[in-house]
Image 1 (spheres, each protein chain N blue to C red):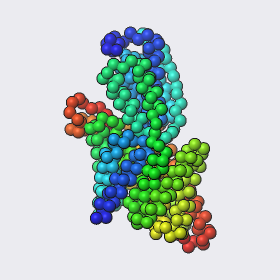
Image 2 (spheres, chains in turn purple, red; image 1 turned 180 degrees about the vertical axis):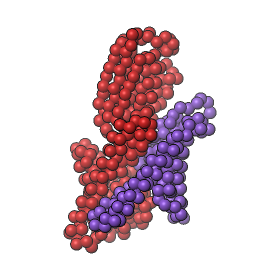
Image 3 (cartoon, rainbow over the protein chains, first blue to last red; image 1 turned 60 degrees about the horizontal axis):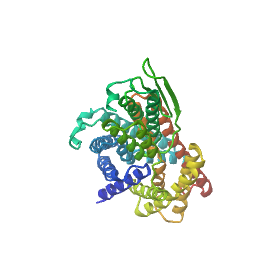
Image 4 (cartoon, one colour; image 1 turned 180 degrees about the horizontal axis):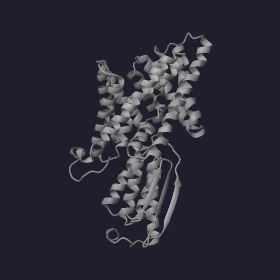
Length: 151
Length: 270
């Protein structure tokens, strides 16, 4: 139950942030779907895996969906990508690092800071890997007719 | 238009100038509103190519565009444009992208393109009240996601709203990036601590995490990675530096207010 509540929160949160970035309203459902899917993967894997690996898997899902929808809607992938990746960016890690620095717990500060960096690197790798896939691969998503060249 | 496509060199210098100006403006809008370097360069090349300018060349950095053209048949044209980093309006990116597709398919004259670009440029963003509300809703959702209770989310909603009021009316028009983000982080921490002390929420940490999310530089971070992956190292590093600076400033703001409360309450709060 709580998993679904969380996914719902991720969907609504992602849509709210896509509004802040000026995503056209007709793309909100896609953005929400991507954000929710990313969080489901991340939250699901967090039980058995470390945060960086879960973030890597979730990023791969997010980017894959973003590219699929970008081809389908023939619009820049940035639109889906930026809002979809948002729940995964280690904002909480930054906070905890600042928190531990202030409370003079340097060991924990270093550890959380380093973890935040690892998560960031995992996101980087996820993005880079999935963008290596050739554009042709995504033509399955295109709405009939012509080849699509966006990425 | 078709003729010109088949016979390069047919363009008069004025037309050529018009096309290059249009390409430049398209690039300007894309870059300003959060597109990747790769997309800016490609769009500009496409516009030039479509109208038959073979010698067009553009070099795009994260805050400037350099365009030149000219060879034995085409007039020499050169222009440099400085483009300060500003907000993200992905709807404008999408609109320019759409326009670039239409240019390739239909027969728009350079004048039409210019006209369309002018329209895109003044495309209204989302109304401020909507943005403020979205910031509140986003904060509440992320507070819940990171482990807050419903009451925490409600407080995060409140501080997310006030944060964006600060961003729209004070930070983005008047303050520098560094001071603006330190102020944002500090404001959120202050609001959340006050709400926490008034017993509006149970977990101070999650309240703060949720409400700083609207400040997190997701666009700069993601674009930096994509630019570096595309081999645009200079722009990628500049954008990454931008993102890291903002991260750092938010942390500074949070930390400053924390230490202040730490002093005042003798460590009880944390």
